[in-house]
Image (tube, rainbow, N blue to C red; front, side, top):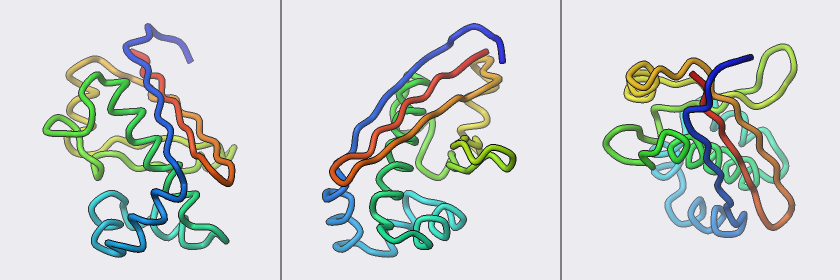
Amino acid sequence: MSGRVLGMGVDLVENERMKASLDRWDQAFKDRVFLPEEQRYCESKAFPHHHYAARFAVKEAVSKAFGTGIGPRINWLDMEVMRHPDTGAPSVRLLGKGDALAKECGATTVLTSLSHTRTYSVASALILG
């Protein structure tokens, strides 16, 4: 992977805060922020809120790397956090406005990393073009 760095972003989420959001708004929150496959993955885990928090952090980090934040140029459902089929590493697929934004700024690759503990989930994103 080569290319010029177009942007980088990082985000940190408190897992208990994610759990509170999930408890309060349940499916409406999930459907507003996470695509069906992301929900299936998170729900298959022993502590789903940790995995939701990590994916939330990835989406925030990607939006920050684009320099836009979540808003009119890229929204929650314009990004899908996936596992790379060969390595299992986290990866991001851009959809809709996310794909259009990537093309507009010449982005060719979005690299991401995530991690979580009992307390926090963190993610970073690097956009190359």
